[in-house]
Image (cartoon, rainbow, N blue to C red; front, top):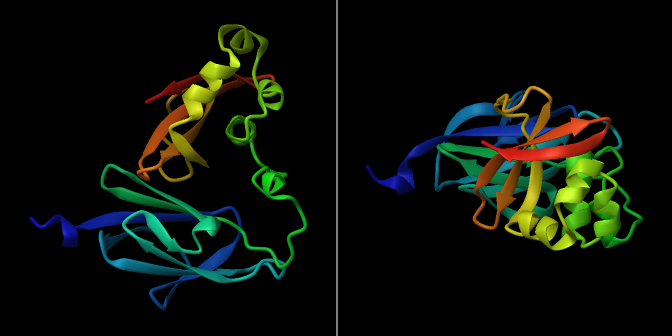
Length: 193
């Protein structure tokens, strides 16, 4: 079978209430539909909140071609996962601060701190047990192959009952599922599937 025309499942999520236009067709839900893998998919986000602005993302495979800064997309087996981010009317913050969202989770804040090489801040998100077993170089090396982090709101696979599951996305747009074990608000261990 020709891979260029094969279909795969597409899952689209947001953290805000929205409706979509998928290649111009209205959809209230955009989760788990089949689509040709190498055909362009145009996703127009129509937020239901007045303070958010609509936008369109063009995706081919799992790669965002247009408005890439407004989405994180990746492959996992025969699925493409797309996480769409909010677009605000005004942004008044430095570039470094923009990746640190106010409502971000502890694993997301850890990832952003390590990627920004702010290891003092990163250690504030780790338990004392984990700090004692890892140094800055090892922490940086662990996250180095990954460009983005996305909470598992797609499959909600239970890796560890006490953990929070996140996909770490590499430069080839492949997602690897990790569980961040959290005790007393601090990350105590990170395990993969």
